[in-house]
Length: 275
View 1 (cartoon, rainbow, N blue to C red):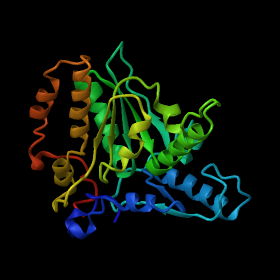
View 2 (spheres, rainbow, N blue to C red):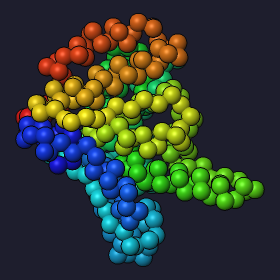
View 3 (tube, rainbow, N blue to C red):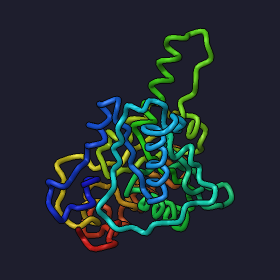
């Protein structure tokens, strides 16, 4: 079952926090962690084109691959496909899902999320804007692994061609000039988002589900791992406070306001029951 907290009511044997890491060790496995149905549709079409078509797939030209797509056992609201969807970015591994809420010169930040964590990021975006005056852009990361592979390939090209202009990795191209710190959140181990950390110049914090697991409701498990919406809010405020862009006491206030240390206070992921 995809993710460490989506089926915790069934026991810790379902708490998968590491399968994307295992899949990343095989160069022939193309791993995606989509959030919404329209993302899956584009990934499936591109994968079929790559493996069985004329070789015009965005994800690559080598047909001798297999696809590993993580789909979660949790009902969520499925949005319509955005009119100006960046399909190329979606297939390369990342695209901007929603701009931060407009305000006059607000503190800025970037939230990266994948799979079931994307709705949490959108909720954190709303809370940051309404309660703390922070404008956060939300990015859907469909493949941390493909972003890393592209960046490593760019490094290799630069290493072997010291006189040539170095190619900018796709993830750096997308996020390198994005304002503010970056908070990455996933229902997998922190090692999954950390695959791209070295290729971004901003302050970077990762929220992930590390450890042996926690069998309870989804909301309680996400609060336990500190990967829920309010944890994203607090981590963002901590990074902004270190930069002097919000009140230094804001993170402490937020921890108290949201009862961050109380697993029973979590609210992220109650749709469809507990299992």
